[in-house]
Structures are given as structure tokens and as C-alpha cells.
Image 1 (cartoon, helix red, strand yellow):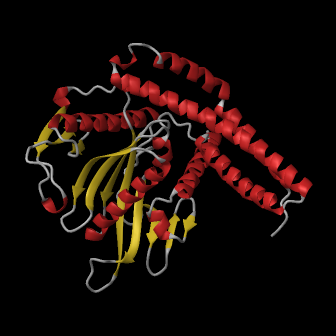
Image 2 (image 1 turned 90 degrees about the vertical axis):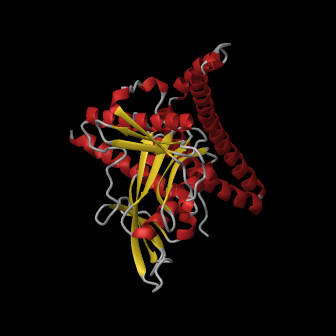
Length: 374
């Protein structure tokens, strides 16, 4: 193994850390924490639970950002001390530990560096993710369910709370569509690079002749609406339909008509919710998602960019952004960034951070290139 030049490596770590700290603007963060702390301490804070939740969530996130930076700075200092002690005493175990910590700090800095690239208007928001089966019949429905599990496992790995808002089951297996929330700061900015068409190639478990099948699923990611967004929808622009919630195979899971479908008449946008216990709760959840989608439409109109964030994906040939090949070889490859991984099981089990990081860097590079051309 090649000898590590620790002084040079530690200088590089400090340089990366300083650039992240400058972009993050720690002084501004601390000022915001002071302001949010004052709001959180107000005696009437919880008179408005929704606003209180926003304040406390934002405060917690800002505090964690500062603490994360502080911990990283301390780890770099501790690494330097460990290297000095190990070299002075000729302690091979300490030097091996230092090499391991060097790798770990590099990774932590790279992850933090990616967060600094999330500077879009809605990047800090929580996310609403919708997955729809595309071309490929029952295999596509099964693939949609595989993708939903992948994203839910990814969120679980990071400790991000999720809420499944709607599931429409296919007749034989899998899902026609599913919608869920990811409740974490920057969830939209992070997951928005996953929007697009995903392609699966495998020996179909539903084909009795064991033939290879190609199927597709579309992923849409939108930012969650906030009270300050002022998206008002007149009642005469919405058609409300209620129906009975159902589970896999069409089995009833509710004996009342509690599921709600909202249709926004001017745009044709349709949102269905059935996972809450009451019609009132499902309607409120559906309205929030409808407002989020209309917020995105408003943003697209203002920027004159069609489907710049969520994308109008067709879930078919010629439109895919990532391929999951399980046969005749094992490979997951992003067709935009060229990032690829041979361990398909790990990816489908939620290990997608490297794909997301590569996607964010790719998107930032494209935006910078476009800005330089203007």
C-alpha cells in the first residue's frame, strides 16, 4: 500500500472545509438560529401547530448544519493530532486508524459539499414523490413497487420520516402508482435528480417461458407546499370524487367511501389519496399535493421552462435516465452522469447516494454551463 502524505492530505481537507464553510455562510446561519430560537420560545407558538412545526423543523435543521460543520472541523484537528502521535511513537495501529479516519472525513466532506450545490428556489423543501408504472405490463407494475421500496429504504437509511399517501395496486402484482412524502430538509433538492424514466431489464418472473423483459417506470418529484406559498384554488376549479379505498387484488380495506380524487379542471391535474382513515384527512392531503403541483407549474411558467423540475416523463423507450440490468449481466447505470454500479441488490435496497450525488453535480454543471452562455 502506498504511503500516505498526511500533511498534504490534511491541508486538502482543510481547504475543502473552508470552501464549504464560506459557501454555507455560518454567520448568517447563526443569525437565523437566533431568530428562530426567539420564535420557538414564544408562548403562543403552538396556537398555530402548522406554523410551529415549520419553525421548529427549520430551527432543528439549521442547528444541525452548524453542528455538522463544527464536528467536521474537530475531526480534522483530531486527525492531525493522531497522525503526530502515531509518527512520534512509530505506532502502526494509530497510523492505520488515521488512514481510515482520513477516508471517512473525505466522504463526509464530499456529502456536505453536495448539499452546498442545492441552491434552487425550492431545494430546501420536503418532497412528494410519485412513481407510476409505464410500458411493460405486469413487470412494469412490479418495477414500480421495487422503486418505491428503494426510495423508502434510502430514506430509512438516512433517518428521514416518510408517509405513504396513496397506492394504486395493479391487478396481478405491483403498483400502478404510488405517492409518498419524504419529510426532511433538502429532500426535494436531493431527490429531484431522480425524476425521469427508469428502465429495468431482467428475466421476467411473470413469464412462464423465462424470457428477458424490459419494463419502465416514471418517477416524479415535487416540492411540498408551505403556508407561505399562497397557492389558492377556487372551489369551482376543482372536481371532487370520493370512492372506497382498496388494497392489493382489489380487496376492500375500508367499508366507507373515504378515498378522495381531486381534479383541477383548468390544468387537468388529478390527485388521489386513500391512505388516511377519513375522507376529510384524505381530502386535506390531496389538496396539499395538488397545491404543490400547481406551485411547480407556476414556477415553470415564471421561468419559461417546461417541466424543469418534475419533468413530463413518458416511461418508455428513448426517454430513460437510468437502467437497472439484472440479466444477462448485473449493472445499474445512470445515462446522464455515466455513474454505474455492479451491485444491483444494494442499489435496489436503497444504496443510491452515489447516484444522487453524481446527479446533483451533473445538474449543477449543466446550470453553470448554461449561465456562462447567457
